[in-house]
Length: 235
View 1 (cartoon, rainbow, N blue to C red):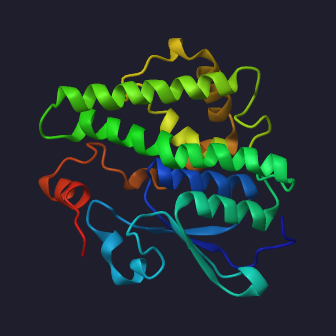
View 2 (view 1 turned 60 degrees about the horizontal axis):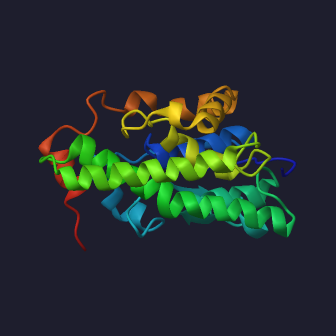
């Protein structure tokens, strides 16, 4: 980690599994940061100021005032942010190529599968206006398959890549929702043990609490919120 970070990193954030990846990393690294809420239910992600740093209109995004060569840099996409912070601090992201490749593999596994597929499971099980049995079965089964992959990977390992890394941070926010995803952790004992280990880490606990008061206990509930989140087209 650098000797000091005099100016806090700006974190554009909403408390979701993708947002938690970054709060956990920032807490683990001990970097100062300020949270700028992006209320995705109200459409803050479409505001011009936010699109200037996150053109895919998705949070999280960061602005580091002390980026490369001491100049500000913005980063969007949660995986890219984790890699950037890992390189910046030298923490939780191996410097050796073999170790880094392993972490990248599992980070991209989360970004390409474990996040999107679990997200679709959430959508069709919890939010879809119609219960579509085919879609529910399709995504619940794929989620089950992915938990099986993770369970095998964790057999004999404390963490996904042996040592604690950004790959673990990327996965825990999604994995802690296993019950809503229609999964039974008795089927995945290594995942269950890993979740318990992760949830015992103080920085993970702090990261998961960031912005807790911002969340609506009812979740995504109003027609306006659902239209904003589930009815997006090209703009």
